Amino acid sequence: MKPTSLTPNYYRDRVCLNVLAGSKANAQAVYDAAEGHVLVGVLSKNYPDVASAVADMRGYAALINNAVSVGLGAGDPRQSVMVGQIAAALQPQHVNQVFSGVGSSRALLGQPDTVVNGLISPTGRVGWVTISTGPLSSGQPAATVPVETAIAMLKEMGGSAVKYFPMGGLATREEFAAVARACAAQDFWLEPTGGIDLENFTPIMAIALEAGVSKIIPHVYSSIIDSQSGDTRPAAVAALLAQLRALVG
Image (cartoon, rainbow, N blue to C red; front, side, top):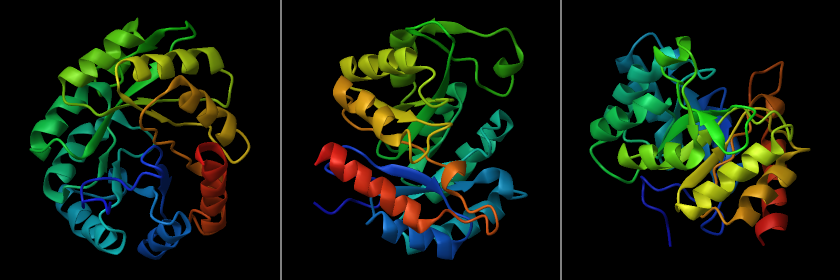
């Protein structure tokens, strides 16, 4: 079934890539390389105000069937309010938020279909995560809770998915596996990000798939960006899609 303008185009109804774009032309190129199974990140931090961000992001959306992922910008929690305001006007397929920004973003969107993630971080303790990722809370002593509780709270706020950052390769394998199992148990979606590259993509995705997570949106950013142009390399996106085919079928 062809996805609606608010629904990401998941590969086999299971996985959708998330990559950045350095320009509108690059957005079109990576979208084509992923055969549409991708959300293209555009960062709010790159714009001076909401109006200019919305105007420019609409140009991206028109090229890639609205597969825009509104980003904070290097995970900057100070961008949380701006992201919510952009999302309200743009109505994109995907919104990146800090934990405490999920509820306001969902309310501003006014609909349940756009994917809104909430940022949580590893703690070094399996089964526990840090939820104090907001503009004020991130500067306070860490609030750590069982991952099951974090997911339940995100559901209460209208969230769609956990954004688990940073992955750090497979250094947090046990922690990530616990998060994946909790997402599967509560039928919540999972977005691993931070430190994912072409080499560790398959083993990271295998953990989430084997845990039974219903939908997964892996973010692969700096490792596939050309340092000279600032563009995401379409060939790398195609390589990620090939890995997905091998994993999912």
